[in-house]
Image (tube, rainbow, N blue to C red):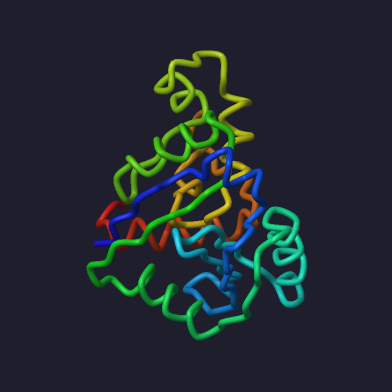
Length: 186
C-alpha cells in the first residue's frame, strides 16, 4: 500500500552540501528494532536500523553529506514516518537519495520487485545489462541509504542463501519472514 517515489539528488544539490536545506532526523521503533530516520523537504534520505548509541554515527554521516544544512531533531516526525512505512495504510513516500548513477539504477530495480520476491546479485546485474556486475550490484545494495523502503533485504546470494546485510543477517532473516507472511509467500 506504500507507494515509493525515488528521486536522486542532482549534482548541483550534492555540491551545495544541503545549503538552505533543513534535515529533520530522529529515532523511532520499528518492527525490527530502533531506526534512525532523516528527511529533507524533498523526501526521506536515511533510514538505518541502529543499536543504542549508533544514532550519533548516522547523524555524523549525514552532517558530512549535508555539511551546510540545518539539522533539527524530531523524534515525533520519525515516529510518523515509521507509522507510514509499516502501518499498512495507503501512502506515498518520496525518497531523496544521493548515489552514483549505477547505485540509483540498482535501487530503482529493487523498488520494482514485488513484496516477498527475491533476486540474486547476478540476476539483478543481468537485468541491468551488466552480466559480470554482481560485485558492483552488491556494493550498490550495501550502500542503500534507506533500509526496508529500498528493499535490499530481497537480494540473496546464488542458490538462495541469505548472505550479508548491512544491518545484520539476523535482522534480514526477521525482515524476510515478516514480509513473506504479509505477502502470503511461504
